[in-house]
Image (tube, rainbow, N blue to C red):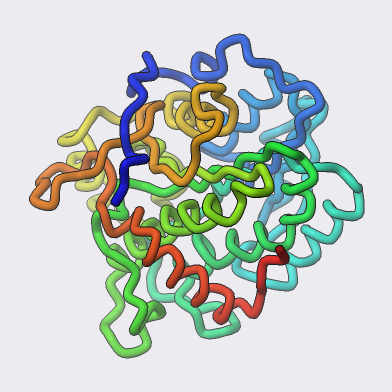
Length: 317
């Protein structure tokens, strides 16, 4: 079912940094959007793309914080955006489309992890609403600019946390079942991968390819909702798979998926450690590779249809 999930033996690995993954690739005349591109892995992604010559638009939920983090970087544009607010997404996309520019790279980097149960104005659970539905709507609104690029790439940051849960189509927003913050997080990360699979299938005829990425275990502000004890346990669990990465290393797979010529003509795959990841065996005890449920085209289509219904947003042909 998934012959795409075959490692390329890229020559890179867990300790590769974003700039090493870029190598001598130049990105002048390239426009990129990096959600959350002002902290942690996102900041290193912005820095690497900028250093290669790209113009980077950074949508920010906290513009003052973003301004301080990105001070002094020319060709970096800051814009307000809150992924849990559909009106904010539409306003951001309208401003970008009004510039008339093509969009070559769209990096879905922003996200939240393991907060207490919170719902958006529609009643949707916050992790699914932010991590998946917000980026789904953003991509739909930016679709004309992606097609205009004649060779765009979309990179969706997922996580090995997708092992925690498949998407529960019967009760995705925990309206009947008890809320479990890790099940909710895992569901949202599986949705990120399924979205990349669905988007790539629809985007390929228009030159738009999509990839899902596990950046590695990186200690960033993503843990802000967790207690110190939970953070320590999370680090221990992560180290059982591989050592924690620096943010520069965490950004490497994102940047590789966004720019590598090795991925020309490819898409709809889940990548980790700067390569295409293999399928995880059904009985795997370590969270390496990708679960088959997360790259199932039929489940991707089901999520796509449901996401259009939940958001009221449809992709134009």
